[in-house]
Image (cartoon, rainbow, N blue to C red):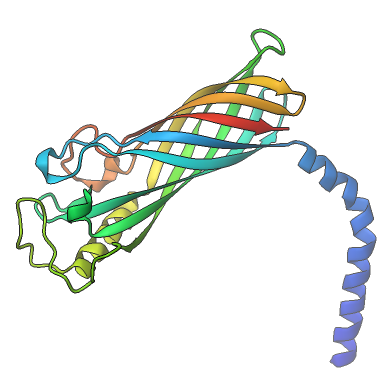
Length: 239
């Protein structure tokens, strides 16, 4: 058995070291077809909760993307955007809501993954590039304890000082709401324009809309704007 294992290991290593030079050109060619970008975005989170929650969050976000070029006009892109905000759990509305600091129960970091085809157009030759894209987006929210508040403290909502929960239980309900019922699934659509600065560097703008398709099956009676997001930002692309 030991002899067989040694022989198998030797043959495997031999195959790997033989194949690496043959594959090097293919790997190099693969990475040459990938464009990278970094971006900063301001994301608007429309909501209509009255006095139950904080006003509409307008949050800064940092992110980046990698796109695999299929042809001059078509690419496939994977993106990631990060944002953070304080949240509370509304007992009356039975859902997580944006919160001012005095009513916070958790701090949430949103990791927004995007998977989308990108269509590129060059109406003026090399002067600028128009982009249109749309696809699947996942907001994978990580729920942390609220800073400066003990888990055993009594939980209160604005206008409701006796919710019957403590901070830890409210935080758990926030996490359960965000991760339950597929509430992290969105459709993203958008467009942008890029201007070449150098041969390998572009500067551009993006406009994106996230549509909460989870509302199709969640069965909740929500205000129309709840769950939508709008993002406006700039982009630096590397080729």
